[in-house]
Every structure is written in C-alpha cells, then in structure tokens.
Amino acid sequence: MSFVLITGGVRCGKSAFAEQLAAMQSDSVLYVAFGVVTDEEMKSRIDAHKERRPKHWGVWEDTDSLIIPNNIFSGYHVVLVDCLSTWLANRCMQIPESEYKQPFHKECIREEVREWLKCIKQSKQHIIAVSSEVGLGGVAMSPLGRLFQDLLGEVNQLAAEQADEVYAVLSGIPLRLKG
Image (cartoon, rainbow, N blue to C red; front, side, top):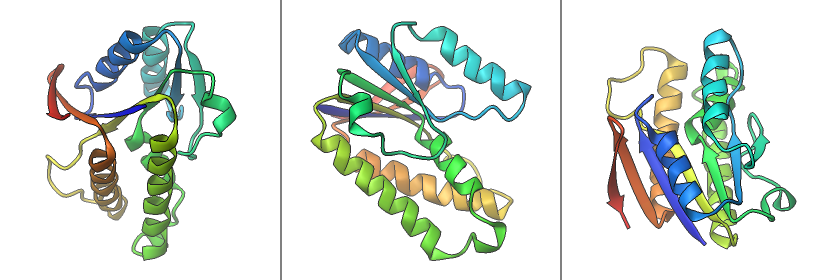
C-alpha cells in the first residue's frame, strides 16, 4: 500500500498527472469522482475527465461521502480520488450560512478526513488523491469561501502528513515535495 497526494492550482494538470501515475501502477484502477453537474460548464469539465481516463477503469461517483465502502474498492489495485477539494466544496455547501462559524461542522469534516486517512493506511490498495491548493492566493471575500479555504488548508496538511509521497503540480510540471 502507498498513499500519494497531488496538489496544485485549478487547471494545472494535477488530475492528468494522477491518472498517469495510476495507469503506470496498474490496469485495475477505481476512479472516485465527487464532481456535481451544476451547469453546462461543469458538465463539460466532468465530461473532459471522463473522456481522458481509460474506459476499463471502474468509477465510483459520490457527492459527499469520503469513506468508500470496502466492497466497492476491494477488487482494485489502485484507487484514484479526484478530488478532495471538490468533496470538501460539496460538504461546505451543505452547511447553512448561519452556521459557518460553528466549530461542530469543522470538527465533523476533520474527523471524516482522519477516519478516511486511517482507512486508506489500512487498505491494500495504492491510493492517489488529488486536491487543489487554494492557499497561494488572497483571503476569500465571502464567509463560505473563507470556510472552504481554511478547511482545505487543514485537509491538505492532514493528508500530506500521512502521505508517502506528495507532489505539487505547477503549469503541468509535477514537483516532488515528499517521498
């Protein structure tokens, strides 16, 4: 088992790099997707991901559950999670605006990430997770944006701490940060 985390900005090539790593490791890949079609542009983005990946790969689509049932991924050698930031965005969108500052929601999300990290450390699969890096820009202008940025920074740090390898992808170039 190994755990690889790939971070980078939007449209930097991190998913394509993750797919290349997965294909180099095995033909038996489960692609875990969290994207939600909310408009035509998002549909186009999701379709581009579908077209790019091999047709024989398995797919598990979910909107908000990071922990995948064991029986879903047990037959695969590689599990590619694309991506943690989309999963987190889906979870943040479920929080009522009046509750953004409630510590309960943040702790529930942190706990789910910790539980997911425990599960993948115990799995026999090679895990590759993609996540966006939003900490390079300014502070978000909206309360939801700040909640998302703060939590994603924490999620990425928790994942990077547990990962065997960490890459940052900048302008399509993967840079090894750990491992």
